[in-house]
Each structure stands twice: as C-alpha cells, then as structure tokens.
Image (cartoon, rainbow, N blue to C red):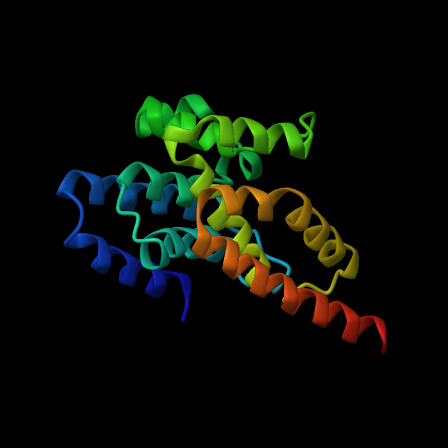
Length: 195
C-alpha cells in the first residue's frame, strides 16, 4: 500500500471523529510534508513521506488519538529538520500550537538525545511524547530493512536506554510494541552478524 492510500484510509477514519476544520488542517499538513520531503528516501528505499504518514496512522489507528493538532504534528514532525521549512512558516500556515509541537519534535544537532527527549517528556500535556513514541515505533518496525548494521545497533541501544522507559511511563501498548520490535531487531542483527 502506498503512502497516498494509507493517508486516504487515515482521512476516512478521522472523518467521523474530527471537525471539518481539523480535517482540513490534517490535509494541509500532509501536503506540506509531501512537498517538504519530495525527493527524499528512507533506508528501505521508500519515499520519505511514507514515514510521517505511518506515524500519523499509528497515532490514530492503534492509539485512537483523534486530536487534529497531534495528527498534524505527526505528519510534520521531520519537516523542520529535513527541509528549509521554518517554525515561523508552520505557525503562519497552521497555528502557534502546531508550530510548537513540531518544534518540540525537531532534533537539533547541538542538543543531546537525552536533553531532547527530556524536553519532549516535560511538555507532558502537549501530547508530543505520544507522537515521538509513535515515530520511534514506526522506525523500529522498519529497522530491519536498513542495510546499515551500525544504525540498527544504535537504534536498539537508544531505544533500550531512552525510548522504552519513556514508553513505560506513557503508554503500555507502545511499550509492548517496542519490546516486540526490539526482539525482532536483535534477532535480525544476530543473523546478519553470523553470516
């Protein structure tokens, strides 16, 4: 299934849960993400836009979060990091709340992973923590498609150290799913290493 089909299913699911104005925001977020990530690809060879759409789908379909601003943040979470789009432009196109969520989810190079995740978790009521956990869960689900064993090792290590404890504090379902995906990644790495 391509990203457009995933997004259309997402919109269909949200149609009965969101106002028309929130659906319009989600559609606009998808378009901005699609343009911002145009020409970018993931390790597994898919267009990059597949990832933010899947993150939004995890949030909606698996966690049943129907908050329009969080769905927009899921779709836009890598836009500032991976394109010339700025926080100010997102605020102009959407609102300050969505811009703040996307900014929280943006990993700046000079900030350590521990500090980055602490800031997200400290923002508690914004819902950014759930979006970040959905982001990591999607990355874990497709980690074995990466040809880079060092990346797989790093993801296993950082997930065990930071994301799994955060998930344990935030959402039992995501915690369990991450645990399962870590097992898959470890088994994959062991199989690759023994070749």
